[in-house]
Image (cartoon, rainbow, N blue to C red; front, side, top):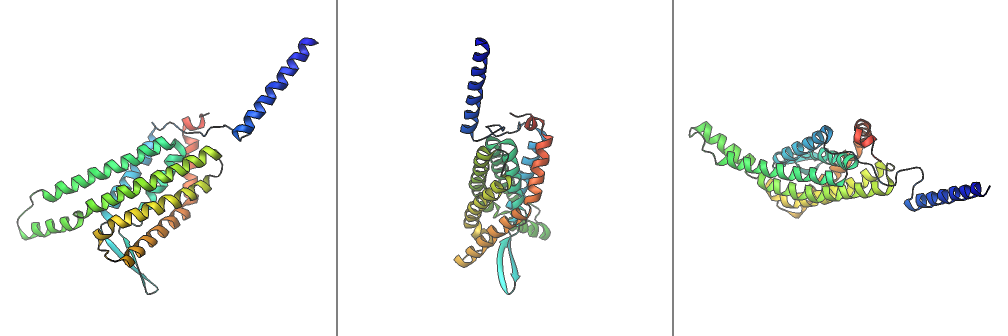
Length: 258
């Protein structure tokens, strides 16, 4: 009887300790630490590759100024306005699945590939071309198209690095606090802050490269760019959430993470 009483007391103490630990961790029946997959997988490589491609193409498209007239009001943007939100969707997905360190590596790869692209454009421009009329005209076209890209690349790299760093930090902190819950909330919060910082920095540096010369034009360019990006990402939120959930089920290291 005495041994039985001792065992029951020990069991009660263990149960109480487990319950207290659960309360301190803010979870009941859940992992106290967020789950992440191993980023040494094919899915991670595909997501990063898509992100890098979008960043490089945005550097080219961003060199072209674009004007839409809606209701008699001119809206100023650039040729990459429809592409860049995809990079942030990829960034959100990488952070949610693989963690902050993996997201930092993805941003670094986008940064590095953009620099490499700018250097390649520079080499293409300085290579001697044909001296006939067609060759001269084509050389001039290439210089006009790729010449300002270094400024767009600088704007893109700086804005992307700042925006994605903030975006990833919010995603990571939100998941650390809420684990698998409130995915949409952290996606929306991260998108808003990340895109705001990115757009302000990018538009400020890139403005002169696409022909913007007044504060009013800069404000038009920046406000439209920010609103467009978050509206696209918010509209694409169901697709982003579906993609994340789909990848979570197909990443063995995520499903088995404790």
